[in-house]
Picture (cartoon, rainbow, N blue to C red):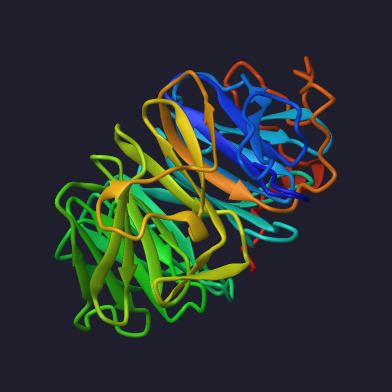
Length: 371
């Protein structure tokens, strides 16, 4: 999603498609809002085979994963379908670029096979390392801002801490609750876990310490780390909650959608004050009813649990499963359609494996993962 210069969103659905959606300041379509912002589909990435389960975007790249064990890559700057990465033996459950802003150097992928794979982002997209330790499906991945550490949760009920320099697990902790959602807070001193009706915030240096707990009436399906003090959560019922980590309270909630809320994402680094809290000036939510809504924190309802009024809305026409944002696509042009190349940069043989560079193939050795 682009707003002003370069905020681009990759959003995916339960159908084999992914969209790039942008908001524009020009008055040029039917999605006009009161302050001149509109949303509309910028690209439809229909090279994906099967339903999309997860998506990540950074540095002009979009990565999508689903139930066919493949990671599909798109270069939005060059308008190219890059093909697919094949290393997992199960459905792709989570993806994360590092760093998420600026030039991405690595892509991390988790799957139902319980393995986390590390890839070189850009150039040859070489497979660098497989992180093995979880016994069941990977639920979530979160990189530390330093790039030296990575956290992961899985259906085996464990949280693991990985040393990315050595590519090995250095610590594991049995979870007392659900860990379907895992978010590292901006400074890297805390992390948040979400699942069922609970969100918990833990100290990164002591995962066994007493967490800050937030209880919800319905299941939590989406979480956004606004700052080290504030989280936004959403899920069943379409409510957005503001979570105050310092006090451990939920001072505000409002009705963002009538259907299940699948994603909430900050799209503005500029913070504004709302009821004594600093929130991103604008953030977006996505629902399974196919709607993406843009919100202005200065216009949120002051009363608790009332229906909010978005500044703009886009309807994808499909059931949305996930959504991510990138802010580095300032040179994207919406005038050029995406090219579906017959021979993409990453060739797709019959077994849908990606050809390795000649140097890596001749040596027979995998490059060490160094962040």
